[in-house]
View 1 (cartoon, helix red, strand yellow):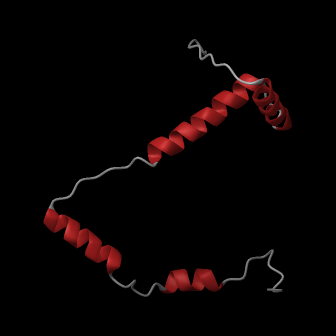
View 2 (cartoon, one colour):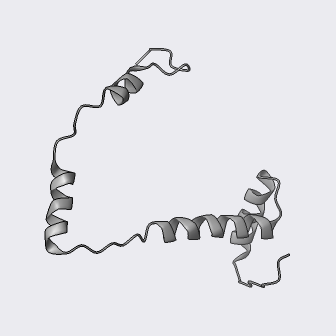
Length: 90
């Protein structure tokens, strides 16, 4: 059960836009806004990944990133498969 309140003020145009989008998704304004805000908040939090390395570990890490990729036959086979929806007209 929802028991925390979130209040905000918006311009009438903003409210109308939000209402239109919510209607298109078959949602009410509150559900739409809460779902959308939570999705955006999760993305922002997930983008804030931080890790710390000492100088030696950082050098090793960057060397791995800069090293040429090893052959990956499985990935090469996968990338060679034509998508079923592809018409081949490129």
